[in-house]
Length: 113
Length: 112
Image (cartoon, rainbow over the protein chains, first blue to last red):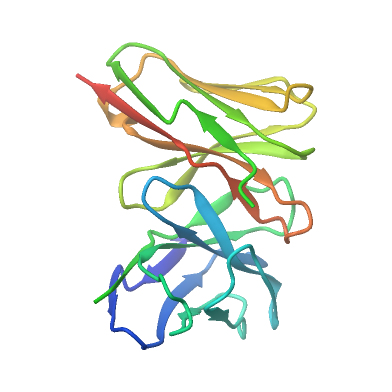
């Protein structure tokens, strides 16, 4: 089955720790995205990548980092510099055209303990 | 930046009734898309309407687009309890690698 997979589903982070969220897709999509969703809020763009070895900051990139070494993978690291990381994180992929739908993973819920 | 704004924020109806959600946006678009999100899950694409289209149907869904007013509406006819979810409109961000800008969504509750 083609799709996009995020792991883990739940993640707990201690203060000052870095954590990495995984996102893998087998849809052969060029573009991949990370969004953050807070309760009752829409999705805010963290980072995006249009091709391998290239990525750009979105609206709320501070405290986050990404890599795109393979087409199918786009991991997100939440660093200790992110002061309020508790949120629901969604990864998406899309064919590189403005008329394509986005496919989303099932999300990772990150909680700081 | 969040371009789309859905209205109302929350909507409660009974099964069999129609549900209408509205979306307003700020800048020119190539297309507008509607997504559905069940609680705690990822988003699922429902329908895409191009900027040169005025209306589109898909099953019980009907989407309209008025580019002069920068607004769109999603109508779900003959709603079912399984339609309970949050609904988001999304527009292309233009220069952000075709990333979609999402509004805050409309939370729909359909009671039996």
